[in-house]
Amino acid sequence: MDKIPLSHARKVLSRTKLRSNPPHSGPNAKSSGTKGPGGAGRGGLRRDFRADVTASLVVFLIAVPLSVGIAVASGVPVELGLVTGVVGGLLTGLLPGSSLQVSGPAAGLTVLVYEAVREFGLTALGALVLTAGLLQIAMGLLRLGRWFRAISVSVVQGMLAGIGLVLMAGQIYAMADMRPPGSGPEKLAGIPDLIIDTLISTDALTAAAVGSGTIAVLVLWPRWRRGAQFVPAPLAAVALATSVVAGLNLPVARIEVNGLLDAVQPPGSADFARLGEMSVLGTVLAFALIASAETLFSAAAVDRLHEGPRTDYNKELIAQGAGNTVCGALGALPMTAVIVRSAANVQAGAKTKASRVLHGVWLLVFVTLVPWALEVIPVAALAGVLMHAGWKLLPFQDVVRLWREHRGEAVVLVVTTGAIVTTNLFEGVVIGLLMAVAKAAWETSHVHVEARTAEDGTVHVRVLGNANFLRLPRILDELEATLPHSGRGVELDLSGLRHMDHACRSALTAWAERNAGSRGPVATGHGPGSPPHAGSGPWSGQPAP
Image (cartoon, rainbow, N blue to C red):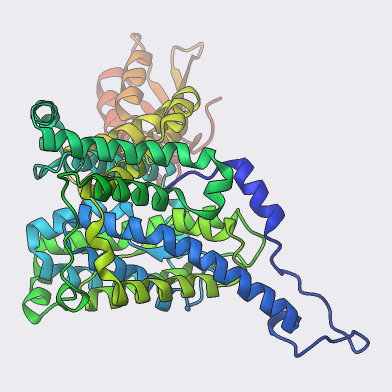
């Protein structure tokens, strides 16, 4: 997900005055026409519609190169990326949930789609996406949308960083018109050989120059504010690269277009029969969870950019699920809400959901009437667009900030990123979530052991805080250090514990019983959830005197 500068957000807020509190229309109010929704007259509706048309064209111009590039990087026909954009506009755009958020194929799922197509085949993709969509609908109906906000931000940032690295590692080969290896580690390990092969090949150097020039335009174009207001940076970069390649007739690979009807391949019964395989179910779960998380995090970011209605997370999940169900039925790419298009939609002055629906209309017209226009686009230019998108997924500033303020969170982020690069997206996210849970358990299990020796030689030991299995070795070590040598005994008080899991309760009980025979009587005050125990002395639950 791309970051949105605060200064940009302020400009958007100053320009986008959505009618969250429509003007009151009492009996004495003058009417300039038929009232529309929210009390707006015909003049207001016309202004909103003009703004929505303008915004939809801006989003359309951004969506074309991104949708095509994501399809190429995913290893599927380019038309399928545009089909997902059409469904995201015409279907998901009409459904309730978010008013200004725009859906379509996203770079965040590119790696997972590529792996799924390589492992299960292109025809199976539709069954995977359709099932993931149904799962999203079920999660929305069960009102699970708000739970996605409980996912550790470090895990999400690590997930995006891992996706960015793997995406860049694959697209650097495409920039030289070469096929990338299969796995992430192989892509990274093959980069030195790629550099050598590129330097000794004129054609590869030419393609790499086209891709590098595309990246340069993407970086520099937004600095020309007047030009960026009319032409989005991705469109400008791809258009310039295409013009140079065509004008100089450079030996660079172009996109292959097969036609919309040939590209759309609905899944068959054999594809759905594979849903019983564990690897297939794991991919479906990864599609559903990652697409939902990326969508809802994008919604939270977009909501900060405008003053209109807030996103209903559960309805948005249902809308995304409906879109993915249709995309799966058409054999297209999975969709998520895309922060790049959504932010552009708000910044272009969109007022209602009509802008995102119209963007789907323009995509449909384009893919139906002028698909031949895609055949002149060089693959290296699209690879440059995705290289730039992957770079923006890397949270450099966040890692530095987290290392200074919360080193544990920084470790979770880095481990999640490394796990995704070395294994795959689903396993990497699971490892990150387990790391986050273990970190939270470790940080909340603060235990303090207090020991005091009475005049008669009895040692009074009190354990305070939260005791779980992660802190058990430390607790037992400190208890062993408090054992008296006089044989007078130990009084162990656990009433100061706010929480004690089964492992700690069993270990402390065993310690008390073991030392009752060798060191003298051991009295134990019971902790939370522990019934009185008669085997090792009186359980009073009272603090040690």
